[in-house]
Image (cartoon, rainbow, N blue to C red; front, side, top):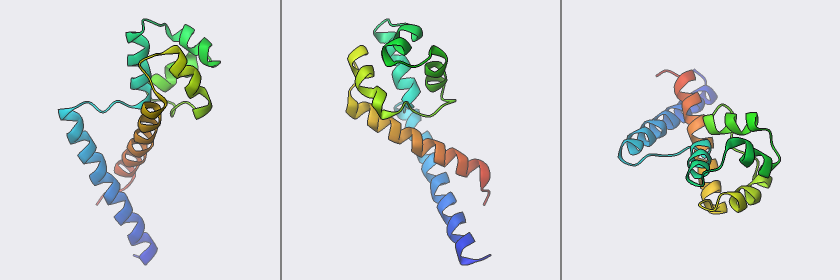
Length: 116
């Protein structure tokens, strides 16, 4: 195995460990993905997916895919409208959960693709 390949495997193993740690932490306090955060805030505010999507200027299908995690987090240009429409959200929360989403996706991919 080349040095470069070893570095890739090491990085993947680190991501796998991170994924395990995040899952263990989630057992104590739920880690919400970006989509779960939006869905929870939307339901708390008693807003429908269609009305929320309309306020953001996206389709309700797209918003549903974001909420379900089949699409990545909404682009940051939509965040101010989301914060205005769903009062329990803040830009800081959205950024934190978008970052968490990226880490979880990377860790899942590494765990799926690389075996020790």
